[in-house]
Image (tube, rainbow, N blue to C red; front, side, top):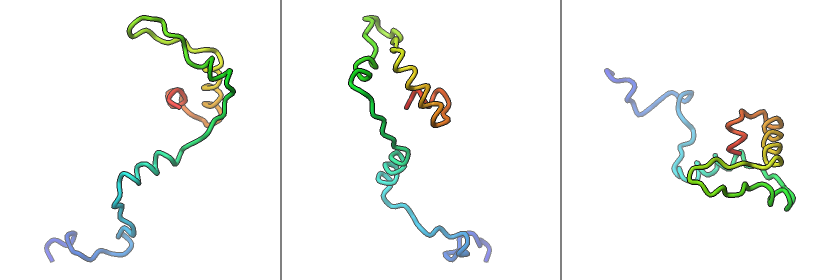
Length: 87
């Protein structure tokens, strides 16, 4: 056969046993795979969000508790700084 790679039969070692048919559900499960829950006190939540500085495009100034929490999570989960900020 000239085009052996187009045959309907493939060796069982190289054949995929499961084909994904519902991609939206599969992608949602991948996003939820790394889901963690962190409990914070109400005082920490109130101090977390920075006050608005009133300028367009101005950088927010986060509280010390927000910075310390993100750096602690970074050390616990061995994350780079960018991933810890996104967390």
